[in-house]
Image (cartoon, rainbow, N blue to C red):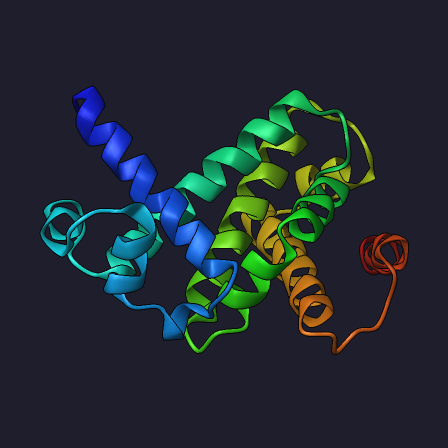
Length: 176
C-alpha cells in the first residue's frame, strides 16, 4: 500500500473516531465521515464499501493499539483495558451501546482473549496458571474475556454504578 493510500485510510479512520465522539454508530452516515475528513464520498468508497467495512478496519486499528499498549506496559491487562475505555469513554459508549454494538463487543472479547492466551504463555500468575492447567485453555480465555467485557459494557451503560477501582475488585472476585 502506498503512503497516500495509507494516509487517506488513516484520515478516514480518524474522522470516523472523531464522529463517534458525538454520535452513535447507528446514526453515523457516510456523509458525516466525509465532511469531517474533508473528502468526497467517491474517495470514501474507493477505500470502503460502507460504514461497516470502515468499522471492521476501525476495530482492527483499535486492536492493534491495545496490543501495542499491552506490550509496552507491565500493567495488568484488565486495568489497561479499563483505563483505555475510561480515556475513550464516549467512543466506547457510542459503539458498544449502539444497535450494532455486538460487533465491537465480540471483537473486544477476541482481543482480550488473545491477550490472555499470550499472557498465559509467558507469565506464571494465578490467571496464567488457571489457563495453562485447563484442558480447554481457549475456552477459559474466552470465558474470562467475555465476563470482563460484559462487566465493562454494563459499566459503560451505567447499569453498574461502580468506581473504576471497584471494577478491578469485582473482576478479581470473579477470577479468583
